[in-house]
Length: 276
Length: 312
Ligand SMILES: Cc1ncc(C[n+]2csc(CCOP(=O)(O)OP(=O)(O)O)c2C)c(N)n1
Ligand SMILES: [Mg+2]
Image (cartoon, rainbow over all chains, first blue to last red):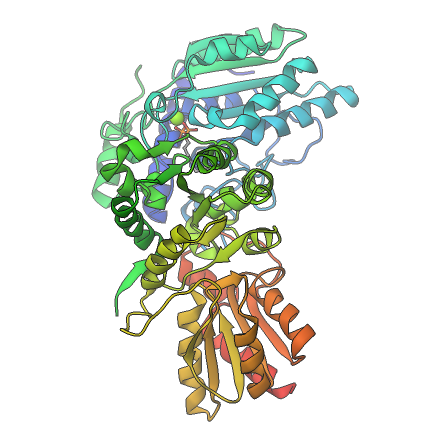
């Protein structure tokens, strides 16, 4: 598939701008963890996953679960960019009667593979999809994005055991390792580190990368696909709020929408931010 | 009239309690700014424990503290307390009858924009079905302050249901008294009994006001304690009015409506209409828009009252 990194960087700018615009319009939602995951989601949807926007329920498609469902804006912006629905719908985020619910909903939005929002539940569901693929002799792959704070949920580790136990090499998990949750830095609220060692101890193939570097992301995905007999986790070091100077690494921007002025400033900054 | 979310009052109540009683400890699961336990954490950092995003662990840790004589208040959103940690609440708190208080915020549709995944419309049903559990759903800030204090003085598991959005203060009067399990008569009437809980109490009062203009005298009773429910208050009122309407920001299955029906069916059969969420999930939207769309306004109560009276 097309791995034109310059093109992806352009798409990423567009996605980031749409995240900011949607959140400014809805005046509610989560910018920080949406912005940190832009490179991961754009890599998957534009250069890796087998999906068909015209046939969102295609049985042989690769699946993606946004287990950290509060980052719905990044998923919606990417799905719209990919053509699953019209971009004009983005401005209805979180409004009554909208297809774009505050957290992803399989019943509402074309392209959403699983309803999420309650943290910690996605990896179990990914395992279920991966087990079904094995049963049906299908070669689709299951991708999932977890938050680092989300790793504090016990169910994640139950699922981590299951994935290794059943040798689910068709599961690739990304951890958005941005270091922050709601009440502060993860290390202060509830230390989740060391993440890589934990997954290794649970029997996973572990790859650590910079989650904003497309080359590293693709390299990791390739390694995951080549790894047989065990699931792979890609621990992606990211910056929460990436791309908007005043949001970067700020815990306060977890769940606060920008006002009009902040939106203007963010859009201006993003305008040329295709280097790096 | 003041306007305050019940979770705001909860934060204040915790600080006051913390000063009076050093056995009060508070736990949260990465939502302390939203649940307002952060108020307590600032004043008593050594008695505050954040377990991270781990609701099952939150409840279990509280249970352990309670076995050693502490009075833990454990908080997160209602969805993740009553929902995610249901079985820990049942088996590690209620079965051993430990002195744990679950103060769950962001209950019901008025969570608003976060949508259905975060809108708990089942928690009253879940919590009230567990033996040994007491279930309280305060109507405003005044009642929340009183309920938190009462819960701390009562020995045993208590579930306190709190909201995200501001609600009008209706209990700010000198003779207001809170007693667990004792309903509060807010307005006398002879034609219909309106039983309301939580944020629906103020809507019920508005409905009664408007019904008066049409010559209907509605009695309004605040059922702040859904379990143990005040059977006498319910039966005595309906003996007089011969019809009942229940109002709650919760599924009509399993909540206040069901609890009132259980009492009336056995002790004083009468027509009942339930105002509540009609066995459906909510969605994203502004709290007021959602209350309207899902039939939880004074107009819905008025309609239900007329239906209840018509079927006498
Ligand atoms: C079960 C559950 N508990 C609590 C929450 C509330 N919540 C939403 S986001 C969040 C913090 C998530 O932190 P992290 O996983 O690190 O996400 P990111 O930093 O990528 O935004 C919390 C506690 C939730 N959505 N689900
Ligand atoms: Mg994080």
